[in-house]
Amino acid sequence: SLSGKTAIVTGSNSGIGLGCARELARAGADVVLNSFTDRDEDHKLAEDMAKEFGVKVRYIKADMSKGDECRALVEKAGGCDILVNNAGIQFVSPIEEFPVEKWNAIIAINLTSSFHTIAAALPGMREKGWGRIVNIASAHGLTASPFKSAYIAAKHGIVGLTKTVALEAAGKGVTCNAICPGYVLTPLVEAQIPEQMKVHNMDRETVIREVMLDRQPSRQFATVEEIGGTAVFLCSDAAAQITGTTISVDGGWTAM
Ligand code: NAD
Image 1: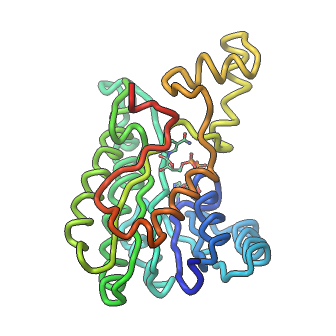
Image 2: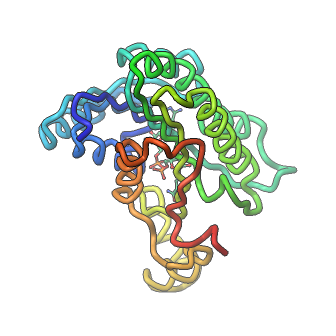
């Protein structure tokens, strides 16, 4: 059980981050939810999760595109035992037309934010002699596709950062690993299905199998529960010597 541990999950009011937060709470951890908004529904999400799992849950607003806010998140949380770096955005364009501000935003949110949160959280973990850093990378941290230059550069970068932090934390009870999901059925992905059905004139099942999952040999989405479950495993005693590596949850994508 993770009871008595505090987990910060960045970008966790939706999708994979929310899935990780829920599975960590189910495993007994107190949770800090985060995004860049500060709406009633964000705080309600924390309240409901606390009730559902019987743990402490707080929502702390911080914009992961800003280094000082990344560090302030860790400070306001009072440090953490588990840090899940999940916040991320995507933009798709040929490199010669890729807007500079989109490149900068993706590198800031998908990569540099983790530099800041880890720098702020690691000293406390080392002091306690226990810590788990889980970075949500992607199959695109290990392979490429055209038109996603910033995302893929950032995700490869997070894999390199993962290895480096693992070495700096080695032997201190602190591990650092990356989860590399393939296509995961998040609200973001779900929302693309009707549009794709129209464009390709296909039914839901066909558009999922033939278009969206053409690189995922299982032809099935991974779920946010599966990504969350993998994060919980990385926080378990069984994973104490797993560090500086990647775990793919991609239905076989990177085996091809
Ligand atoms: P999502 O859009 O549902 O979730 C992204 C989360 O990040 C949201 O909670 C959003 O509020 C938050 N966020 C965005 N910008 C932020 C900012 N500036 N500051 C703080 N929070 C911010 O998307 P998702 O699919 O759940 O993606 C989560 C992570 O998983 C991302 O890093 C993404 O690259 C990665 N990933 C997703 C898939 C997939 O198929 N969905 C596959 C591989 C990797």
